[in-house]
Image (cartoon, rainbow, N blue to C red; front, side, top):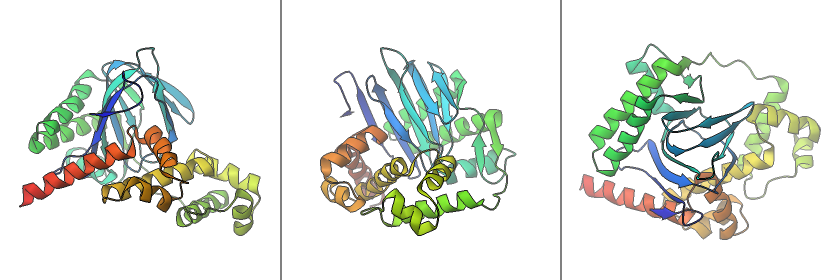
Length: 287
């Protein structure tokens, strides 16, 4: 497994070749803290030892053994140890398509869905998540996929809801969305807050307030998270970390290493090696 942080910490972030829309992370963290960030897909984490403390926009939850942490797409959050011994967990990162497909097939929910709780005590669901990891690590994609569907259906039945149709954006939210699009497009050389606000015809304070309200974090924090997301896609395609760092706007590879490790939980080199192993296995299976 790839080392992360101190010798007492360890982590493996990987993907099974036959489960392409599912990332897996097993880890023990003691001093490592995840800064505010979000995910494009869902987070389903089973805590097996210690306590994980998750910081949300309006609450903080503490998850111990037998708990399942559920985080919806694009919800900003932090994570850190809630006990001196840290925490150990098995985490699944299924795409939105995977979750919505399971919901449509196995539950009464339709359209885009969300989990209504962040942390629940559900040892059976936690065991299912751990079994998904075990099956994937043993190369049994059939069992892993079956267990994933069972776990997701159970959690959705108990803690899921369908999201209402999207409503038109209010003025401030519309400006925040435009600002996000500008930052994504100019990731290498982003504008200052002042110049971005002027470009959008608003004030820096109004833009900052609208951006935080819509995305749960200020523009510079969101940009760091977006840079790491893009770097992940580049690493998955085989790009070297140093090249990915400059392509997404970090000053150098150590700058990427620091932010990538904090947000993803493993260094970019380890992440790239696991993806290379996954894709090689996938080619071997199809040959």
